[in-house]
Image 1 (cartoon, rainbow, N blue to C red):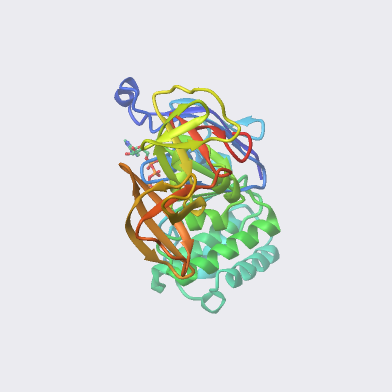
Image 2: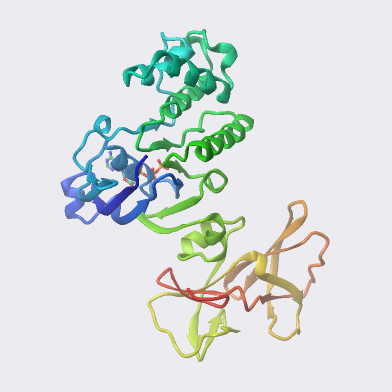
Length: 363
Ligand SMILES: Nc1ncnc2c1ncn2[C@@H]1O[C@H](COP(=O)(O)OP(=O)(O)OP(=O)(O)O)[C@@H](O)[C@H]1O
């Protein structure tokens, strides 16, 4: 397995797009450590597939270099990069049996027959197709075919990395969970470098040790699921991770206080003024309290909606012109004349969407 380094990558799909400054990827400068399990997470169109294809060699970037360990692979073909890939839709040989499909990449690498047999038998069990080993792939369901694709990606142990592009899209929801656990298990056992593209937050957070959040052609944060939740470095991360996402409230800063919809919110540990084109205060709904009006520091709101979600309630309110969401315990009362409080230890301050200060510690 290898460490993958992306060195100042930019990519535009055509020279015209490049001239117009329209880059699908903009200055990606990051590394995937050897043996790490990474998820590339972000909304449709943010550049996840483009980045994956640049790692695999299906695309050559307009600018920058790709390294596998110390080797510059930017101009190498996918074959020469020695990686395994699993795509959204099954890529298998219909006329071969399930077992032959799994054995194929090993035979190509001239692995010894007994070793092939052992690995294929192991993989058949892991993907739950042991009872169909001798069946031709043609007659199988889409679900089963995709399991073969996964198996073919995972069966080799000599690859530099395994790349997955939304591989569970065609898998039924129950099986999704099982296969995800299996992937995680395989990663623990063999410590393969895995890069997994998804736009599904749950999938990313359960699969990966580190999540690479992409937005508009850039990597906006790389972190563990906890780091992304507790210290979103970009307003998009706050909004995208967590359900419901972080409240992001336009504000201005005066004398160590944020003025949000005309209300003053003290910013502990923060003094003075800040000036940027766009200043915003971020607070997760978990840290917004809903109280009676008149309490010290409470800001009057209009309640728009209260949703029960099992053990908690989501309160959607309006603070002046701004929408504020709070999560409160099930059974907690929501007063008619309500106000909200912000936990002073859970405030994040953003300038031009980037975190510049947080009350719980350093940005
Ligand atoms: N072949 C292409 N020619 C021109 N533009 C493209 C091409 N492929 C992708 N793009 C553009 O590049 C940007 C990034 O696309 P990409 O497919 O990498 O995003 P993504 O995050 O993988 O999205 P999705 O989750 O929908 O697959 C988008 O604006 C897309 O329209």
